[in-house]
Length: 286
Image 1 (cartoon, rainbow, N blue to C red):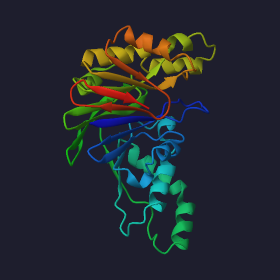
Image 2: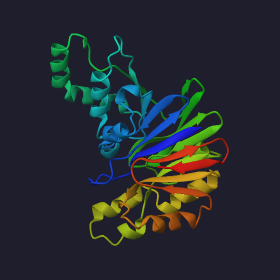
Image 3: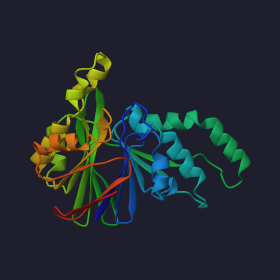
């Protein structure tokens, strides 16, 4: 079984009810944080999951809303772990990730220096191990495998999606993308697809061109559902709603997805949880 929790379902616009884009995936005793948007550690704290228990950080791309709390994750993991030899945090992302992580640690350089000077058991900066990838298998430990494939979020490039598999269960995390062949291939036959989605019908009437521009490189609800249908997945889990779903609008979004995808559709607030079992069996919760 793989457990998927939507930590943050919001957008770049601050929302009192929704943290920034981030998803927690637990499989085979391992815990993966996929993207780290605004407020992510508050959400993991609500689940009783600390930064020091993360197996790896997976980044779909380097847009600010998906990495806004990268520094918090790095520093909090470092200061809240009391092991004498803290292992590096694996960070897997597209090319450019290493530079972003390096610069984030530089930005926190004064803080890191203060803590090393004050605490005898902190003798080095937060340890990280960055792997930049665009395609292929990137993880294989204790029965959990992770595969990566390119997605299409141009002009943001490169961007990637992740497929996590364990014990016959599988989950794909698409990140921000328009429909593309490589995502179809990555998703084929998966138990669940976690996909960001926008409502073009609500965005098009707005007078600000900058807001309308987001339709160019994100999938609509219907397009996300079409990707799920083509791939034959068992569950479509929508997240990163733009504009934010207002209370009472959930069934509108669900109906749009259901117009092209006739299987299980999950739409929820932050901390919504879905269990993905081998085959098409799933148990929603949250």
